[in-house]
Image (cartoon, rainbow, N blue to C red; front, side):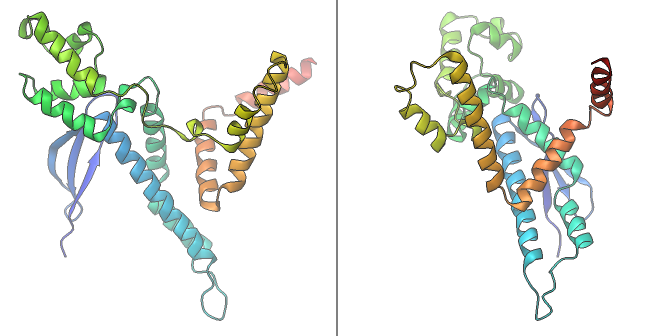
Length: 265
């Protein structure tokens, strides 16, 4: 049985390359099979992240399942750790985490794009005298002003000299964007706590700003506690790994600074 090609890409702020790799020969089949826009990269990264999380969750559930009359666990601890590292290596987890964090920045226009809107925009741009790289830059940057097209199109003023042509190009880009971000995060989703707070807003209108701020902090701590309790064992491992990555850059410097402050007091 011959292994099929593996689709990989390289996330970055610039156009991403879609590369075909052969699993059998471990050689590059086509180094430039296609280009991915930021919207597509974010979708693929999320799918791969969720897929690995589901595999780790199944692995944890399988470990706890009794096997035969001896009530042995399906996976010894060492084998489970090796399987977990195979499913999600630490370096892959780091790259995925940082790439998704960058692409979910609310200032990026691709959060206001959908798959259908990107397809419609590309169909309209193909009718113009633009290269593939220029069309990709327009999709990623989504210029909102005519001066922004200078960054995406070479010799823009010479190739689009008429004001009608420029306005037509600008209207094409504006029409494919939604007014609000489409890809919302978990923090943007409404909760029972926030719904209850909105209903009680009229009754709390006479409170001072200090009391309102304290209440907001208490609500955030309560929501965080509820989320932590709802996490399963596999998700907790991922959160701990992410926290360790964020703390790697501090080293012992934070502890030394705290010790100095205690001595001075």
